[in-house]
Image (cartoon, rainbow, N blue to C red):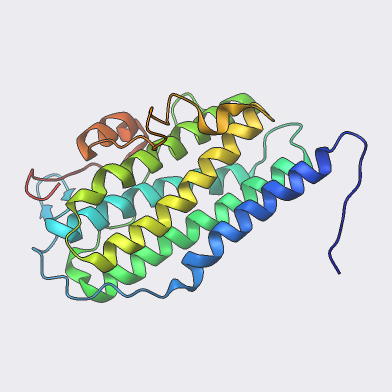
Length: 236
């Protein structure tokens, strides 16, 4: 039997739909089981003088790039759910919990898949910093989440053209669809029942999400990374 929730202002139904939207978006990736095979790119380059890591070349470089961003998002949401901001509603608490679980799935998937197929090319666990972010303040947390999710969508869209293995491209397509749902959910929390979930700042005139080059993404999100890393302009 289908469970229904009836309230006078429709808020509970809206929150339930948002949660179902997020939960369904995470199922496909969790059961996808795609293995990254045939990675023959160069090993990860480590500069022993300053412990700066290079992402690598070709498909491995792109996958490590995605892995770095997923580590960032998982780390951010772990901090959110381990110390929720003051006055958070039950609905928002659950949305952030769902987002946290999704990002951990993404992060751990990349770690296991790249580690299994090209263990010498796996990016290490990174450290992050959140200068200026007040995790006890709703507006600060939501603004940061919005920036990270919008950046994640644009990152996958911009890096897709550099992927040569069609299986990896399918995987990236699955993940970016989840990230786009995250971005929409956060935007709806900030401005409920508005058109902000697909705002003109992230959707172009053709109805497509923004796509940005890796160098632009790193420039935008670089302040969050405490562990330095680089890449040579070889594959990305």
